[in-house]
Image 1 (cartoon, rainbow, N blue to C red):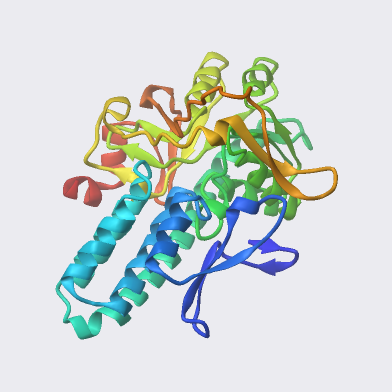
Image 2: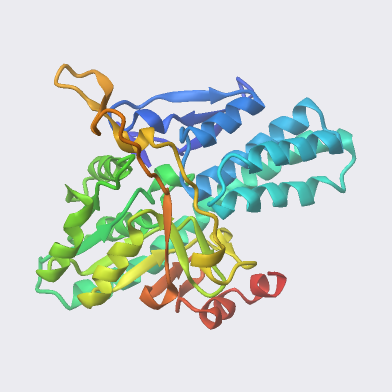
Length: 366
C-alpha cells in the first residue's frame, strides 16, 4: 500500500544490502521508520518486540530468518537451531510454525551448497503468495459488501466495524480484514469504518493510519463502544482477522474479539473473519481448550505509548504504582458466533464441513 504517495510492502528484501527491510511498527502511527534485519537475533527480536506483527507477516519474516540461517551455515544442525530459535518467539499465531515447517521440508532434501539460494527464493515465494492470498480475500469480501450496499439507500455508507489491525501492516500487503475495505472503496462503494482502539497496544491506531492514508472515512473508538453502536443500528458488518483458526472454525484473534462476536450475535449483525489458509491449524479442533494464548508483559497494560503535546513519542504510566497488569494477548471466538470465513478460495461456513469443503487438499493432510 502507499505511504506518502510511495508504495510499500510491510517487508522487502534489499539486494544491495543483502538484508531484509521491515517497517518498525513499534513507532506507528506516529512515526514511519524502516529498519534492516541482519542477524538471527534481530529476526527473533523483531517478532518478539512486535516490530513486525500479524500472523501472515510473522510467517514471512520467519522464512527470511531461515534464509539468513542457511546463508550463514547451511548444515542440518543450524537449520534445526534456527527453526527452534524462531519458533519460540511467539506461541499463538500458527503462520510462524507453518512457514518454518515449510522451509525445513523444502530445504532438508537439498545439498548444503544449494540451500542458501533455495531458502531465499522460498522466502520471496512465501511473501508473494501472501500478497496474492490477501488480494483474493479482498475480492471475496467485496462481494459481501456489495450485497449489503445494494440493500441500503443510495449514497448511504456500508458501516463496518473492525478490531485490532488486520491490515497491510499485519501482512506483506493488502491485509486480510482491510483488503475488502480497500477494494470496496476503490470500487466506489461508500464506506464508514468503526476502528476499535484495541488496548493494550492500540493496534487500531495503525488501522486508522492505514485507512486515512487510503482516504477511507473512519472513526477511532474505544473498545467498549462497539456493542452500543450495534444496538443503535450503526454497524452493518463486523470483519476481523485471525491468528489461528481451528479445523472446526473456532477463531483465535486479538483479545476483545470474542466480546465483539457476542455483541454482534445479540444484535443480528453479521460477524465475518478474513482467513488466509496458512492460518488454519488442521491439528486443532477446540480452540478454547487447545490454542496456547500468549501472555505478554504487564508493562503493556500499565503503560501506554503516544505522542505528547510537544510532539515527542513517549510512554506514560496509566495504572497506580505497584498495580500488576494481566495481559492475555488473544481470545478465542467459537465457530457458532462466526457468520462466515472469507478465504482466498471463497466464503465458507465456520465449521469442520465448511472448511473441509473449501480446502479438501489441506484438510486431508491435516
